[in-house]
Length: 491
Image 1 (cartoon, rainbow, N blue to C red):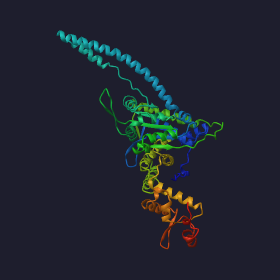
Image 2 (cartoon, rainbow, N blue to C red):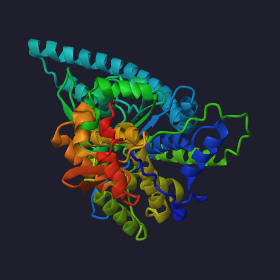
Image 3 (cartoon, rainbow, N blue to C red):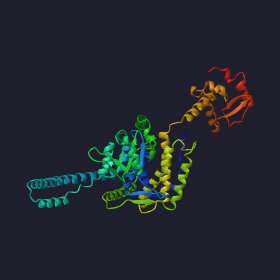
């Protein structure tokens, strides 16, 4: 299948304000990896930093999360871990600091709560004894009420990074810790083969911004609203193939993978040199922005601030509306995304989400989404769609038939033949095509594509495999009916 590459739009060339693009190019140069891999890593880090801070408003008024899922396929030795670590530097450092702080606050809470519990039980026991003796318990009841007002408050535990987790651990973490979380790893086999991906319906719900139900064994179930999840996976192609085969493509069929931005970077192995490092100014600027948004995210988790909603600028709206129409028109039979309706249905959503994230990094969250950001988002998502097709393309029965017939005809053309009786093709082609119900539609499809054309010699139906050349009736009769005809040869 031919993959259409999206042409570069000169108007959407990265500018100095394109922080994510510039940081990705800088990382690509410095550690000598394909820019796709660097861009995937930075998009994952940006989504982690921003998903709890902003939502995005569509032109029709609906509100969507800005969480993005990324899938990067790269072989061993492509420096996935290095790229991932650099792009997520601030994210990992912030989570580590929070983890240390969590340990301190939780230990302090447990000590205070243990002491408080002893006091509570002591007073409770005294009330119980005095009640049995018929004594007045109002004094102890007042003490108990006062103690209840002094009950230690359970601290907010923020832990927003998961590298491998069961579905239960992930859902409980969202419910009891931070409801803005990321499931990310440069060694994605742990995520794919872990428990979280078995509950792919919950991952789909989180991507959509739906309330999720958290089931517990020891207490009643509860619903969490406003949760956000970023999934960032870098994995080897072989691991991905094995995962899809094991699951019989149920994750694709559920629409899970259609929600991902797929990146298939080119290998740089064998082409890398010592090189020279560029300035880290763009990476440093990205890190500063990430830290600012992560701090804002923590404020929102603590209830000290509220999530902001970004909207498209007046210049960006018609650009976005046009690409939505283009994607929809290319989803019908025979068009670019006809076999990928799941992908096409999620592309506009990924475009507007990515545009919001890029604009937030460049212009801030209180500015409307710029036309430059929407153009860059369109370009990236369209290229990711091409890579998605490369990864998940499964040929239809019709495409298999057409390829089988084309290959068979090409093998005969190499022997110097151009014209064939249809009956001869039916008798000698691959057995799967020998029924008229399969062969005739395949011939018609190839004729519509200009691969061949049908002709009538007398009352014999034939095929011309060189439709772009002038028809030669003398040569056709000689090949079909002459003494040196292909039909007089045994193959």
